[in-house]
Amino acid sequence: MTGFLVLIGVVYSIIGFAQAMPEKIIQGPFKTALYPNGKIYFTREDEDENAAVQTCHPISFFLEKNQNNLQQKDKIDFYEVDGECPEIKSVFFGNIHNKKYIFVMVIRNSNHPGAGMDGDFYQIYAYTKNKEGILSLDRIISGDGNLSGFDGGRDCKSYANPDGNDDCYVNYKYKTAADVKKYLKQKYH
Image (tube, rainbow, N blue to C red):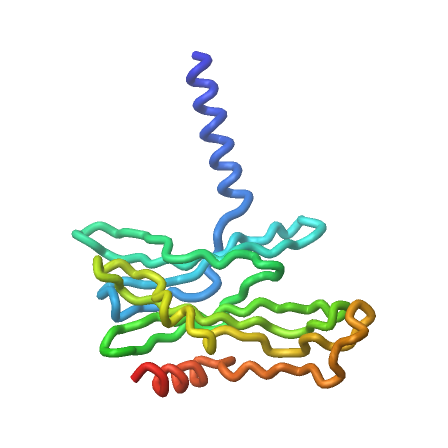
């Protein structure tokens, strides 16, 4: 009887926790040519409307596909809170060397005017099927130094950075899907 009561308590605890922080789709679902009848989407834990202070949460990237007549859900990536909250700015598709890709543009707002920084950090991630047919990060394209950068004021004069620059605005070139596609076409085709 004690074991049964403990089991009931554990089940209710798990159900209560799951209801406290449900995940919410924030982008998608999008169909992808990489997987017929497949879709991708991005989730974030819902905010607690009653919380005094709202916090940011990581974003998860999922692929749902039908494989062998079974619906399968795979977590492809996880965009962590890295000083600031991640946001999905754009999701787009393209081909490089006759391979299909999914591109995800993640931005993090970096507002620290007292330290002389105020702007957005951009990171573009490229995903394609690996040799085993699994959707995964293409580290070479994702690691391209031009596919990440800062847009805004950096190293500006401030009370915490009195030796900073007066002319401190940095303009990141690839802030839209069209800009990134143009760059990829020039470099990788």
